[in-house]
Length: 391
Image (cartoon, rainbow, N blue to C red; front, side, top):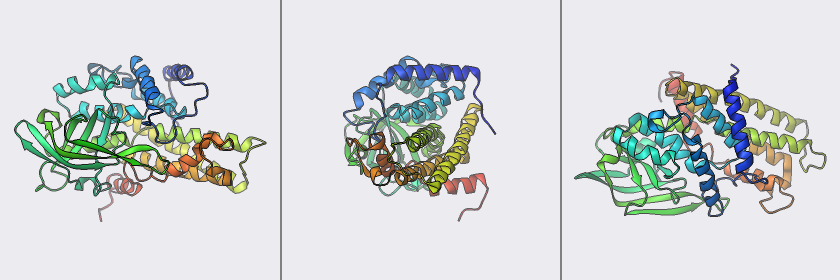
């Protein structure tokens, strides 16, 4: 199927491009991989996101009763495509706008919607996702962080890891175990936890590019009001699966992949290019370009399903699986094209695209692991999509 955008959607794409041409510096080459929360980038990123909020672009597809514009989901897709292709800073809003808010709309109380959605829409609150733990990543349902009822509060003890941007976040969408005796999927509850609550310690995890993006967060007798529980007690797993479906369904990865493909193709055509492009590399670049085009159509299907009020599951997993795998393949082709030049970092006059090819090559090692491993995505596709038996 060939997805086509309406005249109205294409007109909106033009508005987004005009905004980006004005809002981004003339020499903008994007934020170095996973350096969204770096001190050097943070003030500009927050300013940029505020401008988006002022235009109502953070909440294009939100229902009007929650402060959104109530526009079709495909208009949100257009915005996400343009932001990602132009490497615009948007990671600071991704958990709050794209994950926490839809989960609150589906599973939250009316009071939670009134209290938490407007600050997300205005870019006043920045969320982090407290799901993975040192011993519970792919098998998320085995998490051990405990929340014990004490009067009107729950007392949380444990730790979360790979919490992206936790050192910048105002709130955490947190999964805890509230019934240790229940089967592991049925004893989990979800909370919205302010990050300035006493007892929270955030420790940095510096990645191979020497960038502080990930963190480990420790909870020592942290009190969270029971009114901050999202969904019923011990039913947080089902709220979490909603969040994960939204996390895995975006068009952003394919748009970023396309930007990298276009840049590599341009580099290969330049007469003075350091890239060596023989027949095998031309074929490799063509193959991954075809794969990315196909994957983008999968992401469009996920968006269409969301627009129909459906919750994509195996479709979202297919999108995430493809986008991550293709990102790695593009990086590998880029390094092969550049040879030794591909090892150069920022600051070198010989580094293509200010060292981003090398950085993406290093960074993309993790994309088939984080946000749900490729193996987990294949299991979901097999069991929920193809109906294959477990085990």
